[in-house]
Image 1: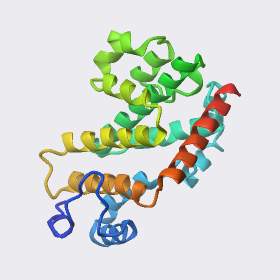
Image 2: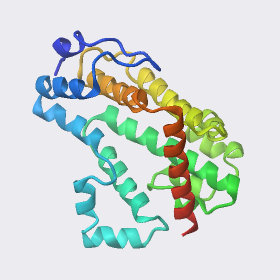
Image 3: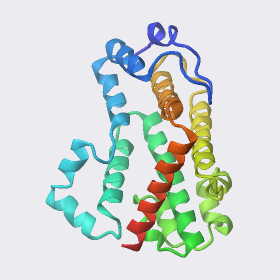
Image 4: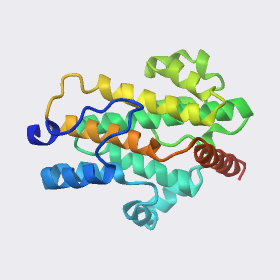
Length: 232
């Protein structure tokens, strides 16, 4: 389905520049103008590991057995289930998006573990080749097989080395922005262009009201929680 009437009326989004249209208003507009089938992809992107669909899965006996076979915390396993939902969706652009984020976040988590001598298997989620290679890797920068799987490996590892947490998160979002641009060069006014616009809007929205002080507090809390989970 084409969305000329939706995208033509929206401003061009620029990295590190706030939108004039509010995030909530954008969602309202998209919900109004997108088909019910396509809107489901936006709903998928809005899900978190605490989404009711994920929590419901955790009640399934087969899923419980899978969880017990991992070294993950329940929170991280729910994150894995969230990725699995994204990787199974019918839209290729979104499947690739979830795959990119899964691999990037796994590399970032593994880099922290390598740096601090922690167990990588307790933070890496998913069952793809990158995840499997990370679980047995002791030196990601010298892992040729991993580098062949991930063209952006050096960039991701460099981001993991940034000590300032706010700057690190900014660089992570910059990698996401670059990925979106690279995968929508020839997409105009179609569903993929709408999804790309929404993803960029979520990145900008994330930083809209986040002060440096609040950002530091949030991210340090996240890191502390991750370290605590790893120790457990």
